[in-house]
Image (cartoon, rainbow, N blue to C red; front, side, top):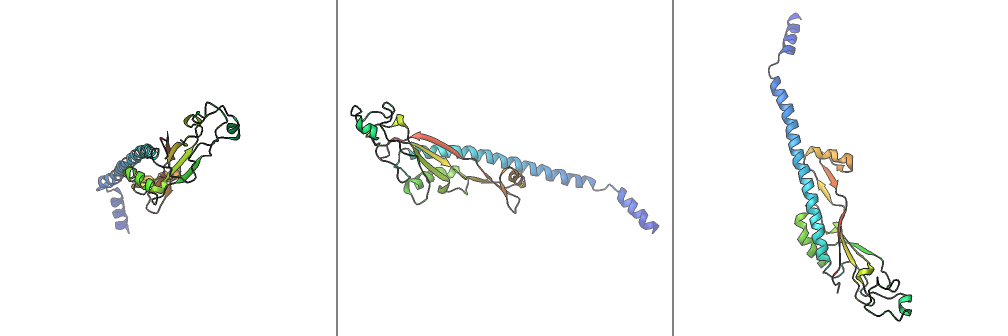
Amino acid sequence: MTGTLTYLRCFWRDEVGTVLVELAVVLGIFVLMIFGLIDFGRLGFSYVLSEKATETAVRMAVVRPAICPNVPQVVRRTLLGTLNLGVRNGTRCSDAGGVCRAPAPVSCDGSAGQPDVAAIWAQIAPLLPVNAGPENLRFTYSYDAALNRVGAAYAPVVTVEIVDLTYQFISPLGAFVALAGGTADESLAADFTFSSMSASLPSEDLR
């Protein structure tokens, strides 16, 4: 019994190999931090590229036919505009208040089956995360009186928005993103959802 106690005391006081244990702990934390920095760097890079993709998409959308259905083709007169014989076709809607009928904004999501959406997506896909798709694009056509004229072709402001875009972390540090709104999965990675980003430009000619 005494020999056993002596052996245990010696074993408890023996410091051989403690450096390796400390190295393993510190090295593990160091590697985790390095991969975490790389991961968050990729996150920032992806966000900047997504903003560029939005700007590219809207520049392409403004010179193409309306992607959403039910976008008016012509600026119609209101009843007041019809009765006001002094307002001729071609008069800017902002110069004669109340004579132009203001269409409601029209929005729709992108679809790979639409040729124009497919063409836009082909240009911006390399800039977005691999799990993104045309359905992450949302197009909106809204009225601006300063851009339209009585009886002329409708010229809306075109807005392209990227919605529900997610970024997947590859390091375990990504699991902490779940605390800020991400969703952690079984692999301790996390999907971080970007806030919606959009860009707008006046259309050139939807015909």
